Length: 177
Image (cartoon, rainbow, N blue to C red):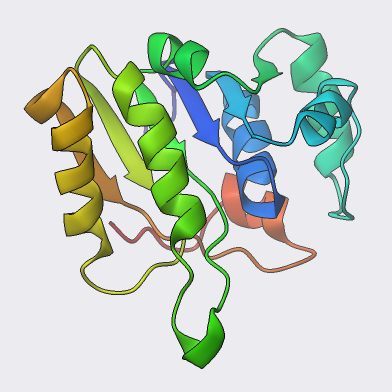
């Protein structure tokens, strides 16, 4: 079985636990990765090779891929839109009052990225969301992105176990699309 990866330019929107882990692991697989977050301090820390949470094996991989030039960080959604062929949405969807998912971070990220999607690309949601969210994101993208229907959408929910996130990302035991 050929396991060769054809490198592509990826963006990861959200540099928290899920996003930073995903960005580092995708860079380690050989892709060119630009991670975006609205928190400039978080971005500066990651660019310095420091992980703001504990996850075994993540910090050495972060440093390795930053040093290799495969992974970089920014707060610019315009830069993300211009750079990426595939954009991963990895923002938080915390529980809101009443037990529903708070989708405000997701909606904000899509709203910030969409106006910069001028070329055909793929947007992939990794955040955990309720049924029907992908349809709303698709409609938001079509309304805001210059590329309109040239932006494809997929959802690939994450299955990371704390303390095993690097292993779960690099050698997953399942794929759900």
